Image (cartoon, rainbow, N blue to C red; front, side, top):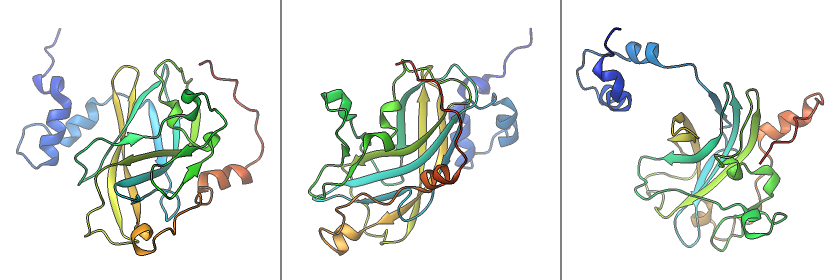
Length: 222
């Protein structure tokens, strides 16, 4: 049996070194050829109300990601979501499922005085459950909501954009990632008390509304 090249045992390390421009015998083409077929397709909407980060009152940053996740190969379950941004040092906190506190009819709420809330059925945070099997072909659409204690740096002005890295960790600890383009909303500092209502529905919702009805998926087993 042929011996496995040592670099294949440290793929993430090799990938980071290539991204930093460290000279190596391994190329990005080698990494691509080694990658197994993807288990998950990640899509996101870009725009002023679809995928944004914004100032929280009295401090910190809120995150709203309009996502579409399609399971390409099973078995698959979501263990956790992760998000990395250039300036964030402390971990992102994903909003807790209201159903976990015995209030399944309550909305997801951001902390702070703005009272920004989203109906539970429009949010996908609660899909982070390693016991919840998602069959191949299953599509999940909605908003992923979270916040962090680090403020948006002042160099990022209202209406500008930045790129983050979204990670979805499956039940085997494997991370599936995609770059996410965020629109930056600084209206909380420009116009205090301006952000009080839920943004309009994402483009995913509008696309589904205009699509022809289809047979609903069988209920997922929790």
